Image 1 (cartoon, rainbow, N blue to C red):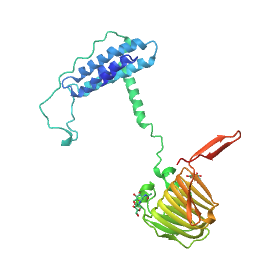
Image 2: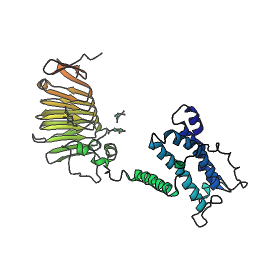
Image 3: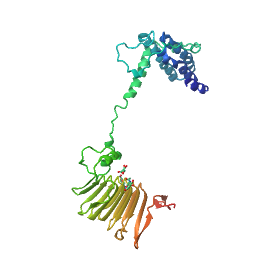
Image 4: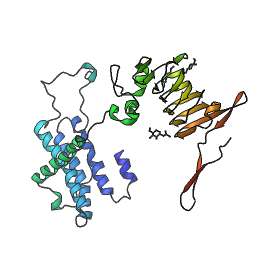
Length: 356
Ligand SMILES: *[C@@H]1O[C@H](CO)[C@@H](O)[C@H](O)[C@H]1NC(C)=O
Ligand SMILES: *[C@@H]1O[C@H](CO)[C@@H](O)[C@H](O)[C@H]1NC(C)=O
Ligand SMILES: *[C@@H]1O[C@H](CO)[C@@H](O)[C@H](O)[C@H]1NC(C)=O
């Protein structure tokens, strides 16, 4: 592959660099060389040197970076040679005292094999340059510098703090809304809304001024009857369910629900739908404001007394307002597309025609 890459880049100004690498990289195969891996690597090193000398010739006067590259590249092989000389001078040596590999890791030995010596490396050096023969000391220095940098790479993220999911606002419903209970009643904190929805048990209870309605599925007879003006209703993680609220209360929040039907009489504050899907809402009495936020699919059935309410929406789609007329409802889609123009002093935005 390297050879191919090199051939494809014959015209490249880095052709000699590529050649140095492709001619010497087989040195990594020294582990399979039985008798004399050291000289084998040296041959590869010489092959690389043939090309790195050309690099030096081209760049010695103009760009130090190439000279440095040659030094550190060749030092890989010289280092490897001294390592082999020290530990594996007659071929790869296995530890006799180390742990025994499980049988699955090796095939039973077949015929004792020793690969034939590799093909002779590239042509001998034609250009010699004293600079290209780095002193042993400087090679070591280069080498350890290289490795120091590589090692630093591994440590570089150490200084960064890991932020767990439960601290990320967008991943934790408890942080997302201030109206969410700050005290977690049930054991285990909420880490992922999905997991929580699956695990949590359904709950309908009054906690202080707040009605909590959570994690219901396929429940169509949910009812809150004894209400007071100061109370709020917080519906979270309900699915395929219907909730009725009687009386007059302060506000209602629907968060993370899907296919939820809500019927209520009077709200003096706001009804807010957030992070939900396919919600149906019916007002029997009055409500001043309905906010639809990050929600896909919302049908709002207004009453005769709530026709003047504000419907605020953001990042939502497929919203329809159903207005009572005679004994029926007429449906009006809420605009999702807008046109904005500069009128000379300010921006003027108006809905564009909705196709279809
Ligand atoms: C809704 O219920 C279905 C199964 O009935 C479940 O797969 C899905 O995760 C639930 N979604 C929510 C938002 O609770
Ligand atoms: C909702 O319930 C209906 C039947 O009651 C079922 O067909 C549908 O798959 C459910 N959807 C979800 C999302 O749970
Ligand atoms: C939508 O929710 C975001 C917070 O998630 C809030 O900042 C924004 O004011 C809300 N918009 C509306 C129209 O309610």
